[in-house]
Image 1 (cartoon, helix red, strand yellow):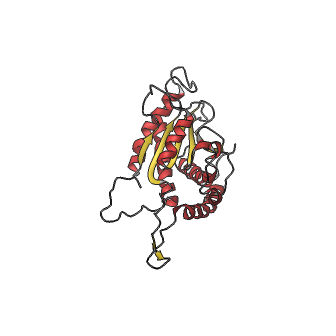
Image 2: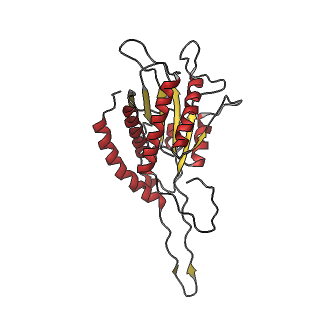
Image 3: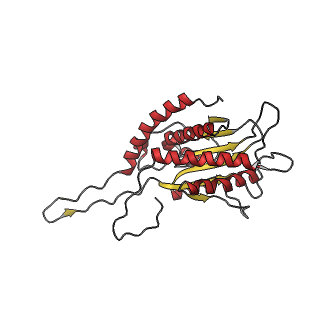
Length: 269
């Protein structure tokens, strides 16, 4: 594990951006005008494909909940409480950036969702990105995690059923770019950050750009640290994360699909 370095990240961002636009070009497509085959038998215009994702939609997945407490972070705090509290601070910060936010839980659930169920729900609604939230008492600052799967060829995967445990593979380049944006935003907010790769559930099962954020205490040279349940610390991290997602959208998301006259609105773009 090495600490994030801005020059390296900036170079990686540039290279991956070019690749991402290529991938988007493959998935978005354009409608072709109708042409004629046999006399009097016009070929209908093929329908425009659905967008690969909705550019203003974010899914938050506060890990654990219900009977699953997660890690015990102190005598009075468990992980499921921290992840939910952080998600509740992150939501208004994202709304302020123009996002629509859906969370896998907003409170203590009566019945817990498995990680497979969380991934399935997220994949169905096709968000711009999914942020899985964790907390730990180990380390310092913000840990940003992208899947450790190897990038697969999105073009060769088109039209094929994805293998569940490697569904993230075609989107790895986008997820790494998102992790890069978050790392730079945390640096700008003067929060220590590590960018890592690991198979944290349900990252490998997600078909959209996805990262996990793990809050760790802020360690200081004086010996006094800031715990993960500190409200001010969480707020700083939430604002930086929302800014990173807005930057990711600006650099990587396709433009909104223009609504034709008389068409119904209400679908997220």
